[in-house]
Length: 314
Image 1 (cartoon, one colour):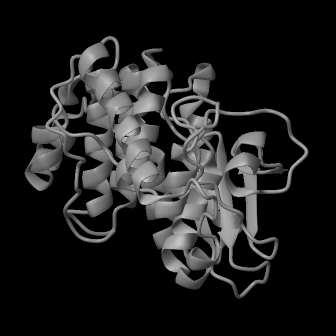
Image 2 (image 1 turned 180 degrees about the vertical axis):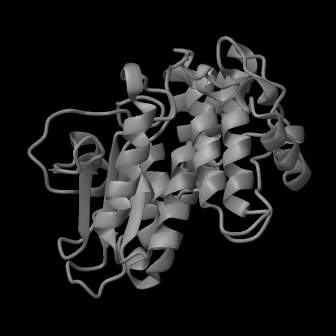
């Protein structure tokens, strides 16, 4: 019997052009999950991936990534803004964050094991041939307290590959998306690992709060790194410092504090250097860093806006 010829999509996915392959896989995955169209999360993820293609070396246009013509036509019909604004506006977060939100919505926040397993399955597919493009390596679960009834809030680590995309999206999330005190904590160090001398926006998460990270390789619990201890006062014996803002704890605690207002007030920074003037200075430095990385280094024509997704929620 003659072997079946590979379809164009199968041939594309076999190629080791990891950015294009994984970008398409993530889009295909979330379109398959989206219960309603146009979905706000699909809108957001398209813009995020197209933006990352625009600042990649080499560049990838939307048509380079979405190789299925029928899918491209449907996406263009339902989501015009991502196609029009990916080369002028910056995303508020990375693609796998949107996948996580959709997974939590469809699964139910209480089903922690199922959510982690679903993310593991996707990440395993993306990591084929040791690829790292669009891969988050950890997921974190935060709760007000460690009881079954306490609502769970999830986050994933930065799903970017390379120095510039990670630096830009970290700064962008600080300026546009992360919870106020979480962003201020990251801004205390961003873009370096050295703490600013004039500003301390770090916070102390109470010990009754659960903030547990898991590896997306095998789903096993893992200790927070030294960076998370410095930012949030999390208890750990780890000495490894990852780039500040890279870890899943940042996004998970953002979602927790945005929802739990009493806890948010409890963790407000207490340093004498946490003043309005110093905070504005730190934010200005972050904006300058993002602008320099985008405009000066990558020649991105930024309109100084962060992309706002549209559509049904999710």
